[in-house]
Image 1 (tube, helix red, strand yellow):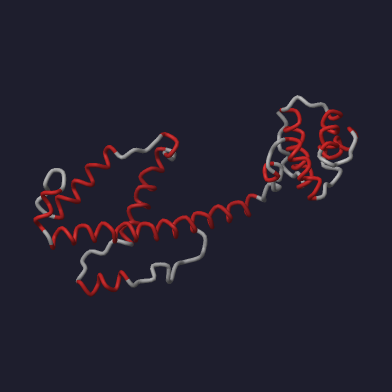
Image 2: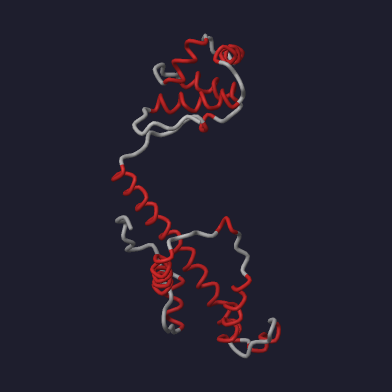
Length: 208
């Protein structure tokens, strides 16, 4: 298998993807040139070789013809050159920041939904008997939800692995993140304010 060069240009990366696609289909460069001819791209085996080496740039219409001949999407052939480590780090940190912001929005919504259920039950205690286990109050109801998490369906593909020494810190990070969105006490006025709050205001846009 051909390896991606560490300092490859966009043309070289495109050519590498083309070569890999052609070889995976068992086509010679001559055969592939013939396939391209059928797609309206007039080239010979020598031109295919130059494309694969990245020494011949291709126009967008030619790239589309190549993708059709290989039976793949154009996006599958377009690869970005590797980023410098410092640039890649900043990109990754900004992605974490974006993910935390999205998580915060989803978490806020989820906590408010849970609160509405508990508040409704507290206002209508006769409804507790409609719930499995017949909890006596909101505290027992929440404890029941917590217990159900023991059987929460999480596939192996959804599990994220860290080094063992990092796990306590990751758990602490996520616990603190939840506490940011979890008030200790709330009056009806507080709740009304929370429903109207813009939870994205004041978010730190610097990378994590």
